[in-house]
Image 1: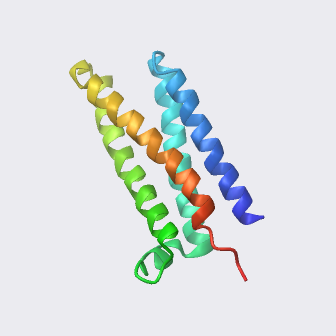
Image 2: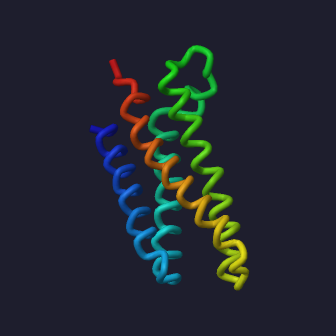
Length: 129
């Protein structure tokens, strides 16, 4: 049940990001929605860590299943991309619209990584015995 709830949250985060992308031309709404999605995603990571000791498991990369290692790598990359999204987004909010093309490319990449994180989570979850 715990896994189901976490994967439902993950699905909702992907949906929320999709809504944020839909409202990309409405700056104020876009910023609020995407900020909420990124914060929720980091909170979800903290939930996973607290309930499953995810960092400890991920640190045993050599003995982990390949699916788990791929999932963790994509998830970490997604969070790193969040940092770039925040940086370029803040530059645009300050009026630097030369960064728009980079922000857009980073945004679509981040969204694709987040979708991959969601998809790979189904293969990475190891049921409790």
